[in-house]
Image (tube, rainbow, N blue to C red; front, side):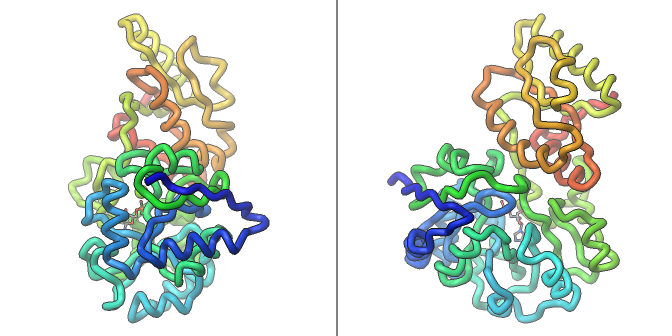
Length: 349
Ligand code: AMP
Ligand code: MG
């Protein structure tokens, strides 16, 4: 089987083509589609067999639950018996958008979709193609990121094709995504709303709406003895083929340190890769350098991160040195993904 690829213009959505995609989902098939965060691999969330197919296509451990995507608030009532007041407030402010909320689940949601948990993760995405597809599929689409488990999440249809083309029915190509990092996950099954995965919406923004917001202690640091509550945050998210090492500190020191380490590696016969910015790319020696964009453009940094990691898998490098990107709004989410990709190898200078 090779996935059928259909190209959809988000400004002028071909509803007929998406109806065909919706039919595939209704029949229990798999369709990858764009959202504003990353590409998702969709299956019917209410069909246990479809959920099993998603795990198989991704090679994902079946105890790592899927996010159910909906297109309207009415659908939420089917998934959870009670929406806490604060969650309703957050939904009013941030849905549709890059926010996933965890609720107690109803019997209607199969355990195959929730990885055996009594809770369910729900998101209403804002991407017009995603919304139209969810409606065409009957309202409930389980969709993890559309990558092979262990690879970076896909930010364009080409990435999905690389990973899943042989294993799914259709890829809806809607161009590149806007944000490039997965949604913020907030758990409402706890007394105090708790961030299980950082994303575009950061703690400050959530606190403005909700008041007190906690961060799951399990995601704070690698040597934390506490297990992350979101099962997916326990797995190594992505290790590029090369060893990735993050170097953190003032710009001058970081540039010096990376030049020093990369030169040493190349003297020993290795090949070094560097993830840097437009501002610093000219300050590195003759290594394989890729700029993630301007340091002041944090949205660009988030959008380019996974693509750069994928690009380096096509290069013959043994070690990739990356600058750190502790940007003001999304720094926590960007560094969370980068450090996971590095297996938490970080040098402070
Ligand atoms: P992805 O589908 O790749 O964006 O990953 C979904 C993330 O949501 C994973 O980290 C899951 O472990 C997490 N998740 C989904 N459902 C739940 C749930 N009911 N409780 C806690 N975490 C969840
Ligand atoms: Mg994922």
